[in-house]
Image 1 (cartoon, helix red, strand yellow):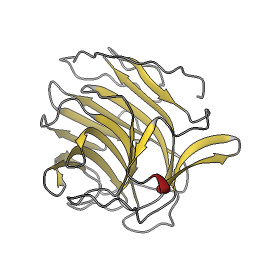
Image 2: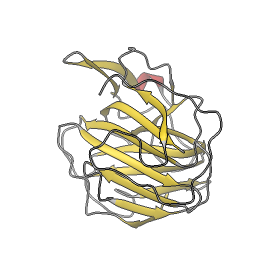
Image 3: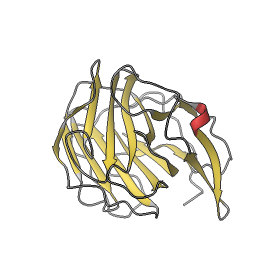
Image 4: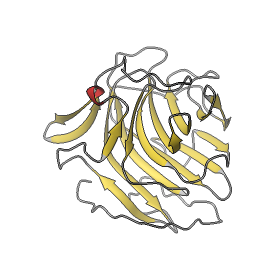
Length: 225
């Protein structure tokens, strides 16, 4: 799972239909192709723009390199209530896409254990994000929008919480910008754990991080029409 090439697209069309996802299949979803891949084996974080560079480092696990978020209390303080630790892919903006990533929470277990994925980022006051929180409430384990005000959940459906362990997990966001459909997956790539419909932001940047926890990230793959 460490040999995919990096591909770049300068212009991307939207697809009107829903996204067809295959369980446990790293091949492109139907109607999509790989536009970004990074496994950190180049031993570099230069492809990313962090809100706090001191919070991130490259870490090796048994010969495998990963991006490690190592700092809970970030120097970045967003204007509106939203995750403190973010790192965004440089020079990539997408509307309709599928983002796959492996992620590992490295903080001792507690009720608000979390990691986050970001998409549709316009600026620090306008973005979407997914919060994978261990316990669900109006501010945890939801799909959120930040639109010039503190984050607000837009999830139509979620679960009772993300079943974090100390092991690696798989996550996926599938977004159709034309319909506004957003589906989020965790380990089970057949059945979404969260869904939403929102068209507020179209094309935007993507990334990963946490609200105020630590963790590791690897094998980023992004597909688009």
